[in-house]
Length: 116
Image (cartoon, rainbow, N blue to C red; front, side, top):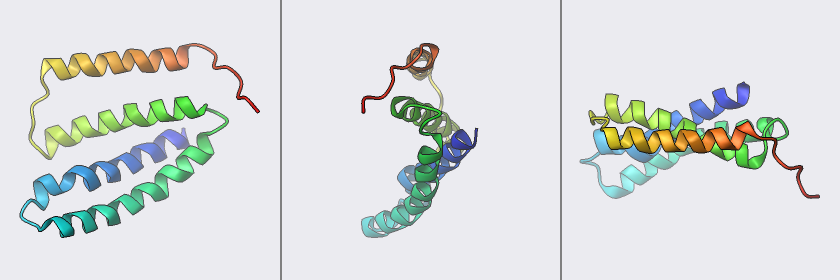
C-alpha cells in the first residue's frame, strides 16, 4: 500500500511539473517553465524511485508500470477538471474504462516468474 501512496504523491508532482505551467506560468518564457518543471519533477523522482523499489517483488515490473499509469490518469482527471477547468467528455470516460480493463487483465491472472 505504501507503494501506491508514494506513486500517487509522485504523480501529483509529475502532473504539476508537466501541466501546471499551462495554468500558472503561461506568460513565463519557455526556459523558466522548463526550469520550474524540472525542480518539481525532481520531487516526483524522489517519490517514484522508492515507490518502485519498495513495490518490486510484491508486484512485477509490468504491474508497477500499470499501477503508475492508472494513478497518472486518475490524478490527471482531477487536475484537468479542478485546475485547468476542462470538461470530462464521454469519449474520455470510455477510453479510461478500456484502460481499466487493461489493468484488470494485468492483475487478474498470475504473472509468470521472472527469468534469471
